[in-house]
Length: 83
Image (cartoon, rainbow, N blue to C red):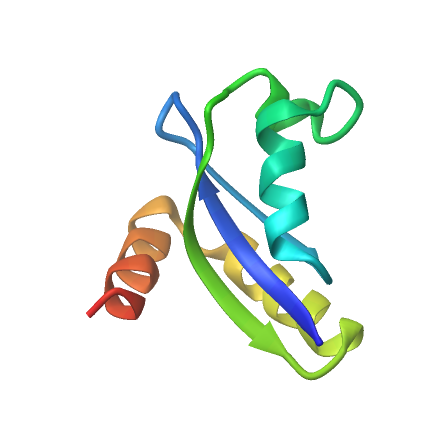
C-alpha cells in the first residue's frame, strides 16, 4: 500500500507526494535536515489530506492528477475528505 498525501506548509502552500510510511514521512518533513528541501524551508507542516492506493504505480498516477489541480481545487479536495 502507498499513501498519496498533501501537507499544508507554514506559508500556506500545499505540498503533495507519495509514501509507504506516512507517519515517518510527516516527521521527516518537520524535522529532517536531509529530506524534502521544499518543506524544510516552510516548517512546520501539517498533514491535511491522505488517500490510499493499491500500489506505487496507482499512487504516482493519482499524485500527478492532484499536482495538476489548482490550489482552490486542492482545498475543495481536502475539505471534501474532512466532511
